[in-house]
Length: 376
Image (cartoon, rainbow, N blue to C red):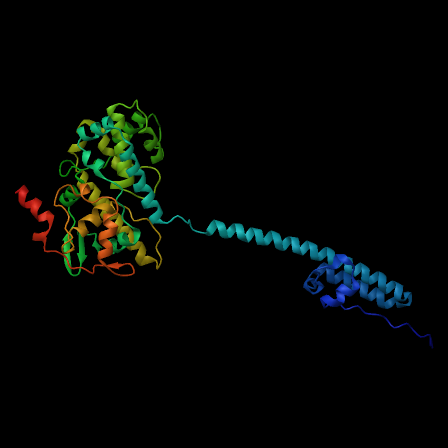
């Protein structure tokens, strides 16, 4: 029987950071070997090494030191490899998160930017260019002067619209939204021929006038209005496209809608179409889609399409603001300027984003009754 005493095998524990730091050199900083026990390749290799170490323990402490050094080097390599994979995974997840993140630009930002663009066009036009617009029957649009409708007020108004019948229902009272009232607010043509449902001819005419084969972004029409060598028809086309896209029939698309380009098929009689009726239908469709989206989702971030300036002015003209009376002149776009909508809807605020604190006027006391009386 071999009675030779064997030197007791020294086992190194890598389960704690302190033990590892005491044993390793300066490269062992931040090393946590316990994280890599799920690596199959590492387990197989280390198990084999342990068996070899047990069978050849006669090598003594020198073999143990060599084994520990090899084990540490393998652990360090695995740590670096897995850490690199972790960084790549983190970067990939961040990139995926950015792709899914919704646009930070809200519908309010779009609406204000769009109307600001139209206001800038109006203020920058020369008197000669304005004279052309007036001659074709759209001079009232030149009266718009930076009167914006805040998002929270627009959303509240939209929630009160019964789009099927075109009514604004407030405090149990009905304010009827009609093409005639659009004309009273905006001054654009009312009655006459409906907008053509087949807009291909009008669209082709617009493309011919701007020298394009496809519709460009609305910014193209804005920039083109700055040119001094436009003929009357080119000027009118560019101005009305901007007015339709940014003010009368706004939506979130950056390219003008072909739906309203059919009227350009007869440029000489363009004011004979029912502009007020088309603008009203566009608004009611926009409100309907917006409210439908709100019902389908707790948080709806869609754009409220349509001329909210008309809806806001028409509502505020029906509110009793006591001694704060505005002129009864028409079109109302010449009365409501700059911050007036904001100033007056603040007086009607109940709480938060809820309005309707003040009572409504009887229709006979509104400026719209007076103008109807004068028309009959």
